[in-house]
Amino acid sequence: MKNIIVLVSGGGTNLQALIDAEKSGDIAGGKITCVISSNPGAYALERAKNAGIPTRVLPRREYADSKSYSQAVLAALDEEKADLVVLAGFMTILDQCVTSRYAYKIINVHPALIPSFCGEGYYGLKVHEAALAYGVKVSGATIHFVNEKADAGAIILQGIVNVEKGDTPEVLQRRIMENVEWKLLPKAVSLFCQDKIEIIDGKAYIK
Image 1 (tube, one colour):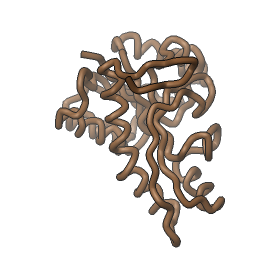
Image 2: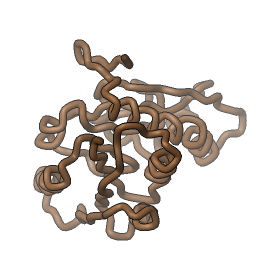
Image 3: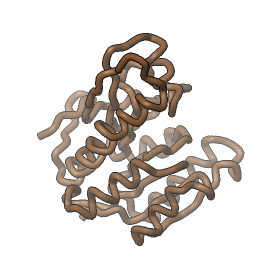
């Protein structure tokens, strides 16, 4: 059984999707053993406590820079014996000290079809604002491994939704969450925990 550590910063809707999937038996071979938050006031911590999952808080503002914060996260992951790290609305880009130690063991969900509308500065509603401003006809979400560059790791799964006339960033965000993120993130986690993802030449394939 693999130890799944979930990193959060906010409301934790993707964490809730993982908790629900684990409860219903949709995550095979793994268990969420700890939730770590960069924000002491994150509602995701309440979701974890309600599900009986241990939590830790590492406030980002207490660390001088990204590297010192990442070293603290790395120490926590090592202490928790993490087999898989899931970034679920985690708002800090992790330093290479974490991404190299946990290469192909950190999964993130990005609310667009990478390589579109991704990289530094593209997060939350900003992604959907950019997609709508461009006039795309479909959007979606990407589940990918995390490396030292923002949103540049190997793609595991992608799913799409139609962009409708009159969509606001909030409406599009909700459609993508409900139809793609909350379904594909637990699926990718389950595939990882069953050793069904293989890496060939830096690309991820489902066995």
